[in-house]
Each structure stands twice: as C-alpha cells, then as structure tokens.
Amino acid sequence: MVPIAAKPGRPLLSAAAAIVGLALLAAPATRAQAEVADSKGLAVHYDVHGDLRSGGTPLLVLHGAYMSADAMAPFVERFARTRPVIAVDLRGHGRTGDADGPITYEAMADDAAAVLDAAGVRQADVFGYSMGGSAAFQMAIRHPEKVAKLVSVSAGTRLDSAYPEVLAGIAQITPEVFDGSPIRREYDRLAPRPQDFPILVEKLKVLDATPFDWNAEMRALGHKTMIVMGDYDIMGPEHAVEMFRMRGGGAPELAARGFLTEPPLARLLVLPGTSHIGVMAEAETIVTLVTPFLDDVTPPMPPGFF
Image 1 (tube, rainbow, N blue to C red):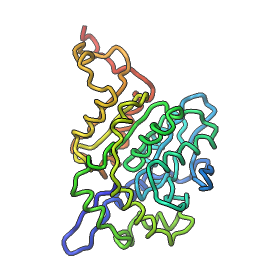
Image 2 (image 1 turned 45 degrees about the vertical axis):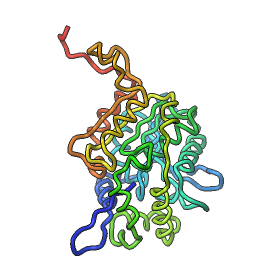
Image 3 (image 1 turned 90 degrees about the vertical axis):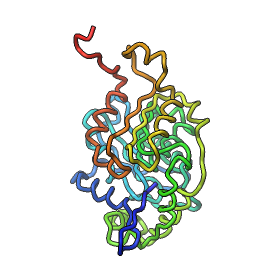
C-alpha cells in the first residue's frame, strides 16, 4: 500500500516517491549478480548478493509497491554483510515485466517461490516491506516448505486493518501523480516497457481495494515470525499486536518468568515516531534488531541481574 497526501495548491502527491528517493541514495554503485527466473512464463528478475553455496540460510527480500530490488538497498546492503541475500523485482516492477491478469499477493508469492527454485535454494528466510510484506505472508501460506523464518514490515493480514483515510487516498491515485518523481524515473529506467506505467497504477489500485483476511491462515503458520511496524504506519499498532499474538507472541507463561530462556516463536518491533515511509529511514535499526531473530539468538539477560 502507498499512502497519499494532498498539499494545498497542488495535485495529490504520492508519498511513495519519497520512499524510492530515499532508498536510491543508498543504492549500490554496482549491481550484484543478476538472474532471471521463469514463473509460469513470466521472466522474474532478481539479484543475488553473496554466495548462496556458503551454507547459511539465504534471505529473500520483497519490496513495496512502486519500488524495485534496487530501492531495498538500505536493507539488502546491511543484511548482506552477514548472509546471502536474494532481492526480487516483483511482477510489474523493476526489470520484471507485467503479465496478463491482475497483480495479486498470491501471484507475487508464486513468483518468489519460482525465484528460489531458479536459484537452487530449498528454503530461505523471507523479509517483505509493505506490499512485499503481504506477499511474504502469502508465500508462507502457499509455499510453507520454502520459508524458514518470516519477517513482515508495515503489512497487515486484513485489508480493513488499514486506516480508511489511507485507502481513500490510494483510490485517488492517477499516473500523473508520479510525473517527475523518483518512482517514475526509476520505472522508466528499469521497466522493459516504460509505457505500461498507467497499467501498473491501475492494477495496484485494484490490489489495494480488494478485501482479504488471512487471520485464520496466519494462526496456522508454523514459521517463527517477526512483525515490524511504525507507530504511525498505514494501520494502527493494535493490528501489529493482533498479528504478534496470532503467531504465539506475548504468551503469559513466558512473561511470568521475567526472562526468556530460548528464542520466542514471535517477535514484535514497533518503531516510535515512525510512519510508513519513515520505516525506510530506519533500516539500520531494523536490520540490527531483525538479525538476532534470523539467527535464532535468545534475548540476553542483563549482566549480574541474578
């Protein structure tokens, strides 16, 4: 999802442009190894950072709406210091072209699974932001055997968890909103058919207006899960807590101990004073706190406490 803000005297302005503009400042000067996977006839582009044969669990990174693998550089570059990373251009985005039919979270999840197959990766941890976070949920639901741990950033399991004002803003988007923005410049630079941008806008508006509710599937997942959200995100922090509890987080018997003796099944990170776009400026904090989760590290006890 992409929140839209109106400014006096100006047309509706896509806040998503700020996401890409910020992220591209951190984009690497040289690209990692570029690869292509076939997903039911769609050529899905992805980049490999590091050695997938190193023996460590790779991290699959899924970007948000109107973004690309390049735009996730603030996260990819940091995660790649400690593990191999696969960054995907989701359908209709980056170097991956569009396909017939709608863009759906289910289709993006299938594309991501096809990327792992093409890369020869049996199982990966999955990290998704915004639209990519919802695709990550669907990947765990549809391809549970391919997902080790799951990290969802600024994404929900119900459409109605988003603020009505956000959904109303998305409904007003037009292709012209992006004219001259970093998003449009990056799309024109990367897309195999730059003239398809209006099609992408319409498909994403449909995606963000289509009701969904994955709470039942979320409860049934067997994956360790970390939920990350800003306290001023596109949905209220109460939904972050709802998802955290659905994944087994906040168990009273664990809280009663006063400390954890083993890695918990679920972790929750709510970033203070942080909006949906502001999450992209918190890559250092997020990677620092997500890495122990990916590594299955038990939260430490204060020295000398007992």
